[in-house]
Image (cartoon, rainbow, N blue to C red; front, side):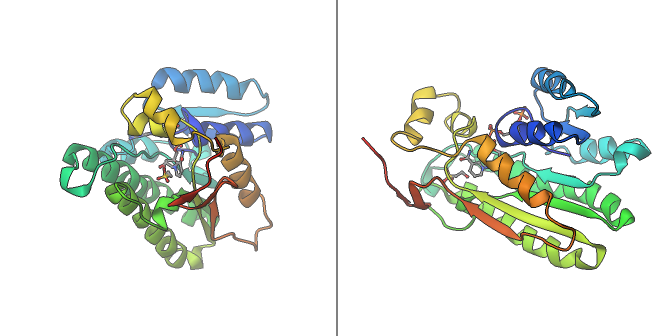
Length: 248
Ligand code: NDP
Ligand code: 8X3
C-alpha cells in the first residue's frame, strides 16, 4: 500500500513494485490521476490494483476505508507512508498558520492515522514492513524550513518509536530521508509558481522519483532477517540540507 501515489516518489514506487509482480493499493486525493495510474499498473499484467481515493488527513475516512478492505486486501505486506508536502517558505514570525496546519495534518497526523489502521493488520499476521518517507529536513533544519522540518523530525521520531513498539511483532520500519528530488514537491510548496519551483534545482542534478523508488524496492526485498532502519539519500551535489554545490 502506497499513500500519495498519484505523482512523485509514490507513483514511481508503485511502478517499480508493479513491474516486479506485486498487487498494490494506491492512494491519493486526485482521482483522475489515480485512474490513469491504475491503468498503467494493470498494463504490467498478472497483478491486481486497488485505488483508494482518500485524504490521509481525514481520520474517519482513513479508518472506514481501510477497515472495509476485503480479507484479501487486508493482507498488506508493505506500507509506504509517502503522502506529504511542504507549503510555504517563510520565517516563522511571518508563517501562514493554514500552511502549518496542512503540513502537520498531512505529514504527521495523516501518517499516524494510516499507520494506526494498517499496523494492526500486519501484527495479526506477524509480518510487515513500514516505510516512512521523512526528509533530510527531518535530520537538520534550514532557514524558513521551520514547520516542514518539524513535521519531518516528527516522522524521524515516530519511525524510531514504531520500530521499538512493534519489534516483537516482526514489523520492519525503514525511514527514508531524501534530499533534493525534482517532483511536484516544490510546485506544491510554492503554490503553483513554476519558476520558483524550477530555481530550487538550478545547477543541481537532483534526485529523481525513480532513484527513491529503487532504494525502497531494494530495502523491501532484503532477506527477512535484515532491516535497513534508515537512509539519508542526497544528490551527489548535496552534502547537507544547507550545503549544495551548484554548477553554472
Ligand atoms: P509530490 O508532490 O510529487 O507527491 C506528493 C504525493 O502526496 C502526491 O501523490 C499527492 O497526491 C499526495 N498527497 C499530498 N497530500 C495528500 C493527502 N492529504 N492525502 C493523500 N495523498 C496526499 O512530492 P514527492 O513525491 O517529492 O513527495 C513525497 C514525499 O516525499 C513527501 O512526504 C515529501 O515531504 C517527501 N520528500 C520529498 C523530497 C523532495 O525533494 N521531493 C525530499 C524529501 C522528502 P494528491 O495531491 O493527488 O493527493
Ligand atoms: C524536501 C527536502 O530540503 O527541500 O524534504 O526540504 S528540502
